[in-house]
Amino acid sequence: MLHPKSPFLRERLALLYKLGSGSCGAIFKAIDFLNFRPLAVKFIHVTNKNKRKQLVQELIALHDIPQNTGSSVDDDGSNQILGFIDAFSNIQDETVGLVVEYMDYGSLQNLVDAGGI
Image (cartoon, rainbow, N blue to C red; front, side, top):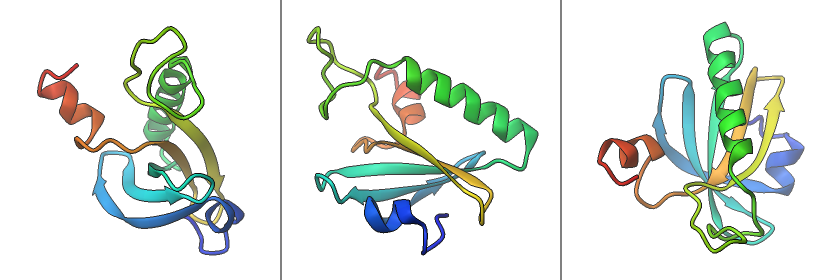
């Protein structure tokens, strides 16, 4: 988790509560101080080689999603699955945080498993 003295946490985000844990780390609901929208922050421990590999795969997948200015609709009018906001590292905890849009329907994997995508 973010160190309490992290500039990113102090200046941009406030963690609200833990949403759950996965194979790579913990996921928290957060609030963005810039626009007060809810976000999800996934903390991945990068000391494990397999977790680093998964982190790279997730970053590539998130990078390939067309980005926009705050909604989940692309410039061409099509809906996005998930908006990537930012990524940051925390040396004290040996984690990388992935900041994405908050999904009211649970995890993206649960939505896929239920046939929603």
